[in-house]
Image (cartoon, rainbow, N blue to C red; front, top):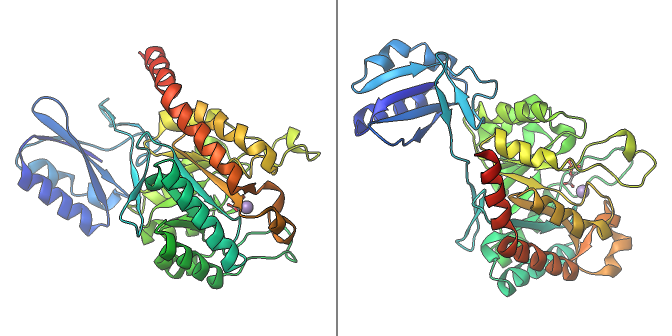
Length: 374
Ligand code: PEP
Ligand code: MN
């Protein structure tokens, strides 16, 4: 629901916020030039909207509209019944670290997430985290570095190794303690959301669970920032609806992640998935959510990771999540996704290339986009 009100009516804003909170909803205020602003109420607003008469009578309220857009909570432009269109600012999703620095997805600066496919040993997990911290310091981007690692692994074959579970989470906790870097980890079971979520700084919904609606809602209710990977067979609108399941619970701290889709052409093993790069641009235009890219699962081959990162940068992506390796000797011991893990030494070169891109190319691309959209 959208409520338009006169600027300076703080008590009205407070009453709307209180009523929204009673139904577990969040509000977003868009300050507009002139005398009116709008409030967008986020979540499942059916019960809230039944109070429309009360809302209209609050001092300074000019109008209320039910949102008619398909993506009520995440759309960049939401519209109401009588043609009002509200263009919302893109959202910045913040993930604070123990080091006191917030990683800000959607701020215009690339967020670098690195780590093993899965924490297997403490030594491996710490070595990658230390290398990430060192790269952050070397290039002055510590506030953009973050860790990843799946302790609960979705595997195609039931006989494959499925991660260390909470023991793996404990390794990620140790890596965070030592380096201050926050971490994201996958959650697959809705009953484990509180337990995993209590440890992790950010939760990941993997491609196989992208339409596990109960899990999406459980993560949304929990309220921590979340990376939502696109289902490997999902259309972009299905992906956006999945994000709506989370947002509908009042959690808008969602980062979309393009990780490649299966197509006719990925058969035969030349690459694991097909990156749908245009989806990045489309998601940025259609939604308020930050969007990152996974160059590891789109390729399945670490030698193809650098150019995929740069291709996503050309689409003005907000960050990347890359699977990495601390020591080449460990590759043969890695139990999942070994072939796609990029050595941290090589990852440092990727960071350098991304920063050069940000400095020299991104401003020109942005200017071109603005000119084209004018
Ligand atoms: C992963 O991040 O290791 C993973 C399993 O990703 P996806 O769900 O994209 O395959
Ligand atoms: Mn993986």
